[in-house]
Image 1 (spheres, rainbow, N blue to C red):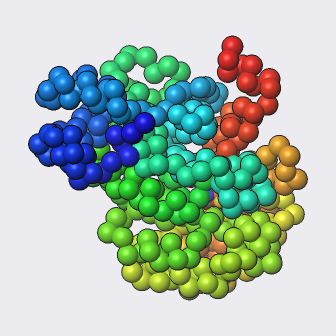
Image 2: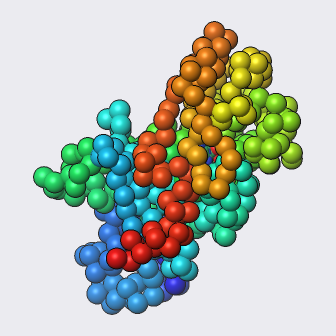
Length: 365
Ligand code: SAH
Ligand code: SF4
């Protein structure tokens, strides 16, 4: 079935023409979808009744069916598992901190990169998400936040409010689904409709070099985060297998060019794994590796252990030492505990847990 959120504004105008309607109906529908977040054509009150009926019969708007949601104990994260029309499942997370309301979105069902510490990577790639399936994830939480309600349902948030940030850090490698991801982010950053500032959108990638160079040419000033996890090719080949194709000298060269073109700072994610990538020597190597960049920032994330994977998080003392070496080398750092470890909020972990029979029983009551 046609998903209306998959269409750009001009594609909606074209659709209306092929349906024998004036093109401006497409603009009206676009407003209802992307500004008012309407999910039922019946509520598009400025459309003729017959058109509303045809839309209801032939198109869908919200492709997400909520299967399951979990909050962490402090009420700072809510993680939702959704089913798509083809039966695939994806995860989306709302995170509340620093006065932000951040939605972490997925771009693929599964992921083909296969990083051995990542729950999403373990199952391989099922398929790309469509633009509408990506947009709908943000709209879903936005609708909940916009609701006038004295009850925050246990989350540390006041309603009505709005989504303030998006991180493309859920399931999948966004740059491997480049066109759909960019179409979705453009719609969300459209100043006339959803109007989220592109500067409040962060896209995380493993470093697909040709796509980073393409991103550098886009006129959409989103922030870029690169999942590094290792300072040498030898180790990174193991932890992030795509490194064999785009090894570190190539990646760093692309990032230097990205920075020259965009004048934007690049953030690196580094999941700290005990005895694997957390030594003092590796911290010094990381300082050297990042030297060609202007003001690099490193996010040190204690690994969230995935069932079935041998990797364990580094100790707080090791993380502190690693951080001190980076800071002494002129690199700014943050240590970010992945929120909601207790609700399996690591990338793809809820979906993995949901495949266990006892959790499925919980979902279906
Ligand atoms: N595929 C993209 C974006 C999704 S993953 C990427 O890899 O960048 C978002 C971040 O979560 C990445 O930095 C990824 O390496 C990290 N991650 C995945 N599994 C993790 C785990 N078990 N513990 C900590 N970080 C993890
Ligand atoms: Fe894919 Fe990112 Fe997980 Fe690697 S860390 S398998 S690229 S989702």
